[in-house]
Length: 447
Image (cartoon, rainbow, N blue to C red; front, top):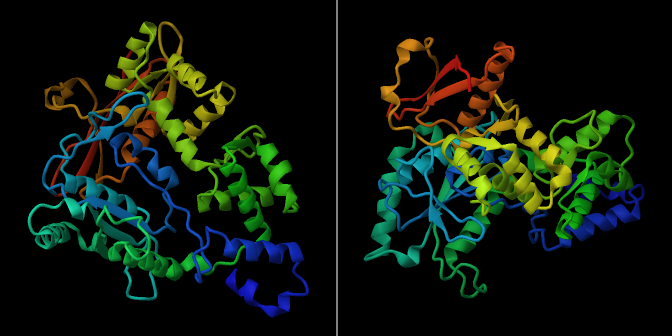
């Protein structure tokens, strides 16, 4: 794209409005001065309940900044903190409730490693893509000798990474939270260095110099404008007729689909294949979608007594009743797109649907709500078929994979049962220093 902008031979053929667009974009607040790039920043929450959702938005083309609290000891038990609307922040159980802070760090690194590409950077910045920057925070709260505390953290962390993981690491920084965000003359020097390092990495990524149609850039700019005005989503046919067609000509439906997939890969929109569904959603504010999906699949503690039992079913067993979805959509004023949201969650393997006997009501299984069972050894395995084992070469299973496997096995087993029985999946995720092991015991049972 940069070559097309700088090539003077294009001056006579490029429309003036397109030249104006490029100049405006590069001079806008989103453009980094003198770099010709603009960032799209995602802040991923670290709580376990979000891990099934993160992979939907993680890109192999990104630069990842892994943020560590330097005041927390690596080998102390990690705490999962969640703030529900209307409530104070509270601890909640998670599927990895016995994990240490180091385990949480390693899970993030493994998630990034699962996106590894065959390409590598031409420079010595890092060996494997995507690149990861380690950033320690709360330096201002370290007790005693801050320099010794920082050195101790990095010295303990480095040996824990395998060579495959270390190949993603480009550098590490320590941030004083009291200085972050201050004016330039008072800003933490590490923040300045971190910013420069991110820009240097971004300029080295293989896809940065990739040429794209300038009309697609204009569509992206229009999406930014609409999402900043609070327009979070539109149906596919409205997106095509009122947004895309302003700037693009499509010779076939395939051309329009190509634009949608490009914008999805960029993180500008969220779109899943719904070629034959003109009412399918195009989400123009992906962060809004993350928040909505979390609100729906976790549900807040209901005020009405009639929903209390349904909430307990979700919290304790991962079973989401349609009544809770209806209630959540009502509170969020999203009843009109309820089916599209359910379709997105099913498409991304966040939930699986079944009709529960004997009432015949629709229910949804939400694997990411499951927590570790401490009494799995007491299960009588003699009465069930031999388990299926999936083994991995790394210590940790990539985030979200476990939940997706549950959904896929559930759907497969449901088809095999021909609808005669509901399927109950018993999932055991043991911890091991040598390998990560998933044991899935599939058996039919009446629910």
